[in-house]
Length: 194
Ligand code: GRF
Image (cartoon, rainbow, N blue to C red; front, top):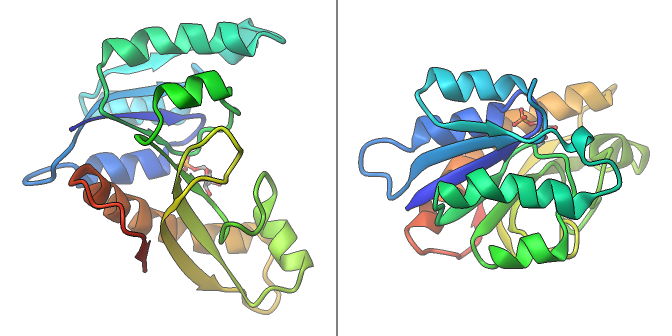
């Protein structure tokens, strides 16, 4: 299976996915693309010999369809079987999402269906939750709402700041996403609860 990974920043999740796709893994990374040409993850991918592409969304103000049309060019050229959103911070239109229906994954830093959208850790702390975590789900047109493919929980600790909680969750994202992609690429969609 050919995997394309979309990032917006440092790409720590992308890196773990790439590092796991070796040996008898049913998938290989074929492209890492970003909406930000300065995304640090692009250099990390290039250093691993993976093709990269960047389409600056700021060149398409108020033109989401134009940005996506530009992004689709390198994306379709890579002929991906699976697309992984990994720290990708742009909302994709239903038209784009349905093109890859059933084969686009995302990792979201909350225990979905709780805390769809942004600032998930601050919201969990404000609510006084005892636990937080991350979810890998299939991407559907409704934001952060597709079928859950994997979930991992972490404790909220006394005195936690959003940053401290984010770091604890991110560490578990790095375990969860590769494990879910392995199964998904092998055709197994049963949810993985770590
Ligand atoms: C992190 O906040 C992570 O929780 C979310 O995207 C952000 C950046 O991730 N999935 P990455 O380091 O770019 O993979």
